[in-house]
Structures are given as structure tokens and as C-alpha cells.
Image (cartoon, rainbow over all chains, first blue to last red; front, side):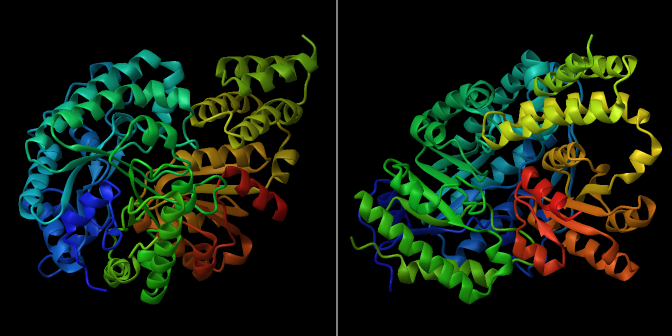
Length: 363
Length: 212
């Protein structure tokens, strides 16, 4: 079925739960889109080191796949690297920290605010600006930043931080304050690039990791200020959390993001399915994005991707109608589409095309 | 102090994540003649089992589990050298690690702790572990179990490389293989020729203990 709304019309309508020609679609294809640029041989190292190359993946990815959104996720080691951690950059693998910068309690306290005009923070800001400039008139664009606790666990290792939450509480808070200051600088730098939104990765808000009290103490209190700053800088505040058992009451009902991107883990008891997420009211005031298994983009046949996307469209449409909603759900992958060379690009296209064909909501 | 009080002290030290107490009570247990194996099973392991149950019920979260594990290892360091060799040799040896290209090891560390608490003699290969290190461990460590994890999709193929390496070395039938980590699944385990997939540490222990 042919689209009758353009990307911005559809996405804006979905954000406001207005009727749409079809559900919005955005498999979280970021790093993998480097493969549709030029001869398809761009390395990950190049992609994360050059603003133009970073932006080119979003621009070419849009031409190839026709998404409804563009969100500038690079990887989760940008801040940690700029804090001095050693980041391993392979040709075809997401960069990751191999030697955290913060090893002692003193390191937490001595941590200084990284300069957002240097390092990969700068690449991320400038690269985001370039794709926002290129795509901003066609679709909803958003910057992407790691939340303070995520950045800290990348810079000091999660195990160390979690144990220090009890053993060296004040030092952990000192580091979180420094990182929050850095995040504030990044919000302002991103705001100057004029994306429509900014997505925070708050993945430690998971009941497999932290309880409500720990989450509030070690991220919530910092996140609230950053969420507010995001709005002040002219961007819609959005959240991505691909962990299992997310803190939905805090991150959706209390934080009030415009968009909440989440994953579904059918094997984990209590992991909310798309239907349950809508039934429990989490889409009442927030555009939910999810919950196709990202592994499907690597492992499934095109037919299976089509069937899975069709089934998800049907599940979502039924649940939206039952809840009296029109469009507050974006068919997306719960986490980033694996940026590996083995990811089947045809499955990304299939997912979007299937939503175009079967995503019409008629209650 | 009575033996029962010392065992209770060990249990409590683990539950409260108090490493200093765990070491203290472990030393006291030896001083009053408690067998090291009893101090482990009836003190440390009992405490860790309670911690595991609390984690499963979302009464405890990762920080408490990590502190408990740290406390348990503190006590184990004191007690393990005092286990008679014949008893120690009865334990199934397991090796565990995060596959090459991935350094996310928090889940692996929790699984290792729960395997240790369940009576396995675990050897931690660490993170970013080369394929050949896993493969060679069957001979070098006399491992009966290989546990591999990854949190990243691009490194999942490393698990298959280990299974293939074991087939090539002729050691596949000597060892059971369990995999875990967010992007993995039982169908993936089946595809690559592993024995099991587990979604969490509790399930991993259940599957392995039922079979070894």
C-alpha cells in the first residue's frame, strides 16, 4: 500500500497519537549502514573516526531503506574513550573498551570533564550535525548519548562501579557528577546542531541489574537534570534501553520521554511484550519503539523477517486499538541491528517494506 | 565460638557481602577443626545460594550479588588449600570465559560464582579469550565443562569457532558446552553444536548440575 504521509508528517502524528497512514518504522540500523556507503568496504574504525563518514552512513542508509527516523548512535565507548580508556577499534566490530581509565577510587575523584570539542565526542557531535543537516527536512532526526552511569561503567568497568556503589559511594557520585557535567556540554553541543530529539541510553535501568533505589541514586537523580536540559536545548527527550526488565515506571511514566526504545526478551519471565507494553499504558503518552529481535536481521530468512514484522504489526495494531490509541508505536528492533558483515541488509529493507504494506491501523 | 556459629557467620558474611568477615570466619573454622569442605558447603555456598535466590526474586540486584561473590571468594581463598586432594580431585573442572573480541564479563563472573557455589572447580579464562585457549583447556585443565559468553552479536561466531576447534582436536566428546549472553539463544546453541544455552546463572547451574 502506498504511503500517503511523508516521514515527518507520519512521525509527528505518531508522537501525538494522531491517525497515520501506517505505523512508523525504524530498525535501529546505524553502524551497519556503513556497508551501503560507496563500495561497501568502510571499516568501523573509519566510520567512528570521521564525521563525514559517520554521517554518510545515515544519509545513504536513508536512501536505501527509507526509514521514518534517523538516530545517531555511534557506539557506547565514546565518552569512556575521551576519559582516557583504551578503546579497541577493529575493522568490522563495534569499538569497545579494553582498558578502563578509572581503576582506583582516586581515579573517580580525579576524573576531569572531557572536552567535547576533542576526540570522538567531537566526531559524534559534528557527524550528527552533518546528517541532521542532510536529513532534517525529510525525517525526524535525533542525537544519541550514553547516560552518566553507562559512561561510568564503560570507563571503570561495570563490576567495579557496582561494588563501589557500596564500598566507595561518595567517590562514585563524584565521578557521576563529572560525567553529568560532560553530558551537559554534549547536550548543548548537540542542541546547536538542531536535531529534533536526543536519545539517552539509560540501560542500567533494568531490574536484572539495579533496583529502584540504586537506580534513582546512581542514575535517576543525574538523568532528571539532563532530561530537563535536553528539552531546554530544543530537543525532544527520548530514551533507549535495550536491557531486559527495564524500569518502565521510572523511565517512561516519571521521565516522560517522547520516544522510548526497548527490547523484548521472551525467555526472561516478566519481560514485557509489545502487547503488554501497550496494555499497561506505557504508550499512552510516549511513542514506544521495538521489539523485533535484532538477531533476526542476521539469522532469519527474508520470509521470516516479513512474517515476524507482519505479526508484530498485527499485535501492535490490535493492542493500540484496544487501548484507544492510534499510532504510538514504531516498529523497530529492540537493540541496534547488529553492525556485523553477516547482517542481511535485505532484512532491514524487508522490515520497513512490510510495515509499509501491513502497518495501516484501522480500529 | 561454636562450629555452628562460625558456619552461620560464613553464611551471613556472604549474604551481606562482607569479605572481611568471610575471611575471618573461614580462618576461625579451620582453627576450631571444621572441615574446609563443610565450611564451604554449609557456610559460603549456603549463603551464595540464598543470594542467588534473592537475585532471582529481584530482592537483590547486581551490586549485592557482586559483593556476595567477592565475600565468597575471600573465604574460599582461605579454605580451598585445606581441602584434601582426593576430595578436590572429585570435582568437575569447568573453564569459563568471554569469547574473543568481547570484554563484557559481568555476567560471566556471576555465572562463574554460581558454578563455584554449586561445587564445580572453575577456571576463569577471563575476557577476550582466543579460540585456541578454550580448545586447549580441555587438555590443559582437564575440563569437563566449557562455558562461554558474549554480549555482542559480532563475536557470537567465536563460540562456533570454539566448538569447531574442539571437533578438530578430537576433544568435543570429552566436554559439555554451555553458552550465554544477551544475543545468544538455544537455537543458536543448537546451530553451533553447543549442548546448552542458559538465560541466567540459575538456569546455567540447573542445566549443568543435572547433567554432570
